[in-house]
Image 1 (cartoon, helix red, strand yellow):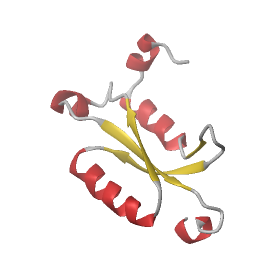
Image 2 (cartoon, rainbow, N blue to C red; image 1 turned 90 degrees about the vertical axis):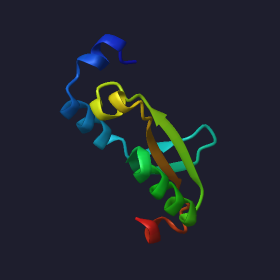
Image 3 (tube, helix red, strand yellow; image 1 turned 45 degrees about the vertical axis):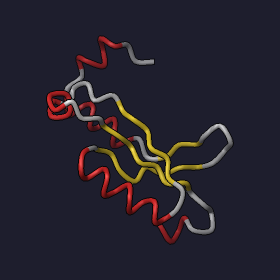
Amino acid sequence: MVSEESRESKTIREKMAEEELVREKTDAEGNRWRKAYFGGGEHFENWLAQCRELGEVMVEEVDSTGYKCFEEGGEKLYRIWIRLDARREDDLF
């Protein structure tokens, strides 16, 4: 697990590079999810509405420490995950 001190000492470029590596995850039930969006604000609301049209979604709040615009504005930062269905995966991605 990353300590609070090391998380704060990372540059925004390092944090964005790490985020770029987060692409898929598997939940406790074995379902596969693909990240569709990372961000916040109005863009988040638009993406969420569109992703819901595609299928089952999961929203995950992300620590906004180091993202100056989100910290200063008091905005939350999110990931939107779309559940992967083996039959539809090729159609979506």
